[in-house]
Image (cartoon, rainbow, N blue to C red; front, side, top):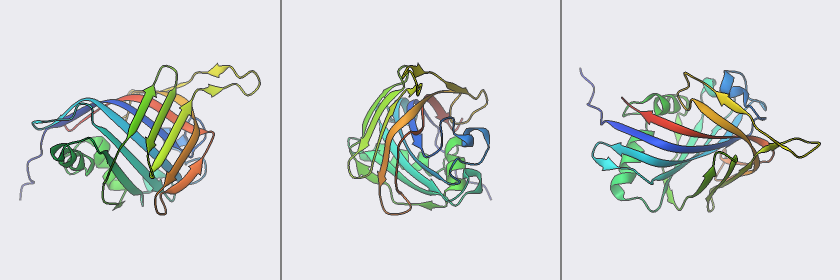
Amino acid sequence: MTSAPKTSWRITGDEVVGCNCAWGCPCQFNALPTRGNCDSVVAVLIREGHFGDIRLEGVRVGAMVSFPGALHEGNGTAQWIIDSTTTPEQRRAVNAITSGNQGGLMFGILSAICPSVNEPLIAPISFECDRETRVAHLRIPGIFELHTEPIKNPVTGEEHRARIVLPDGFEYKEAEIGNSVSLRATRPAPLTYEYSGTYAQLNAFDWSNA
């Protein structure tokens, strides 16, 4: 029995992540999360991309995830949000990619560790990101908000710059690390949480099923 053929896809662009871990996030190094569980919000802006013949430039996608323990232990809950300016064809493409059924390491892993996935939401996504300054503003009304800034010296207030470099990383190769000034998710439990002064990352991404 042969599996159904997969549609070729690739997306590149900017990603912003905020979670409940301390700066540096132990999960980036296969360690246990700071608080024993993982709550996170994510948004991406696709600069270039396609799913078969469907173009995905300019598409914005958000996600909320919650894990009762470490990510590698699974049992996660995920909620995908697709920007309301997308076309029906683009929404079908994004749903196909994020399902993990079309291949690609990033979403294959996510689908494996998130057995509970809510129906995708369609909503306006505000995405502002300046990776160089570590400043980002994400907002999906009634769903989640994330505001980041540089990590600052607690005595002098001077900006502190740090990066994580993962040459073999499947999510990113290099990420700027910032501070989640405010992170709030307002969906039904377990996707309801609020944090401040926690981990944030701003990075370029290049994902595909090639």
